Amino acid sequence: MNLSPDDINNLFLRSNNFGLENNVTPANHSHLFNFSEEHFAKILQGFWSSGKDRNLSSQAEAALITIYTFLIIGGLITNFLVCFVVARRKQMHTARNLYIVNLTVSDISLCLICMPFTLVMILRRQWTLGPVLCKLVSFLQATNIMVSVGTITVIALDRYFTICKKKSNKLTNSKQNVIFSITCLWFLSSVVAMPLLFYQIVEPVVIDQCVMYEVCIEQWPSHNYRVLYASLVLIIMALLPPLVVGTVHAKIARFLNIHAKTQKNPRRAQKELDRNQKTTYLLCVILINILFNKKDIS
Image 1 (cartoon, rainbow, N blue to C red):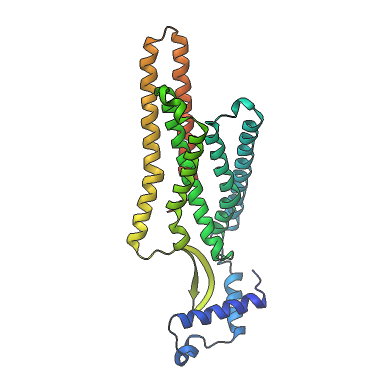
Image 2 (tube, rainbow, N blue to C red):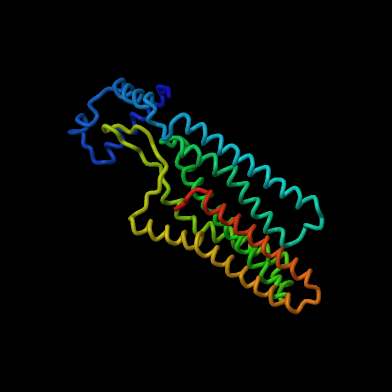
């Protein structure tokens, strides 16, 4: 990495500011920074030329970039196709399919906004994109993941009310209620992710009393706050959704089994059972994919 004179000067000034912020007085300032800007430039050039700004080897970098590229392109194509099909087919312009559109919007924003920046954070030790993006990327990623998980959970609940509680189906499946549910999902997810806007910061890394580079990390007031927030996110994202989805579809399966015994057409009843099993499997696969293939926000 070749540093321009401006880059060297900025880092040199940050090193001096770091000393001042840590109560370095003029009397001992020369002890900490008793080198010229040229000497400082040599230290930096030696650091970057040695490849210490990389977290992975060149081969691992190439493999990871390839994987992320396929994931991003594949995710964009798949989700845009879903939106295209829903938009083109009038019979799919239903209130319930707004949940599907919401899920695709969340996935598209993850592919476009979060995954490229996450790749940069994995590949490089230093963060060069500024404090605003440092905060926004983590916040948007957390929000989108929680919206995706929440949407899967709401879809499962919607299926339960549609199949098992047919009298309340019209009420829960109205367009106004679906839009209200989606709005609440985004609002609550944003509220839960809000702490990242305050505690995700750009922190300088100091080596030999020099600010060598900056990293984007979480900096909580105390370890207890971090553990509390991580526990909250774990419950909201990893424990409650699978529990709700599993319980709801177990009740749906039980309802269909009882209903099948009273059906005059056993073939139709079996088709309903098979369709429920396939839908349950699909929702569980999507939920597991969201939980285990996205960045750990906590």
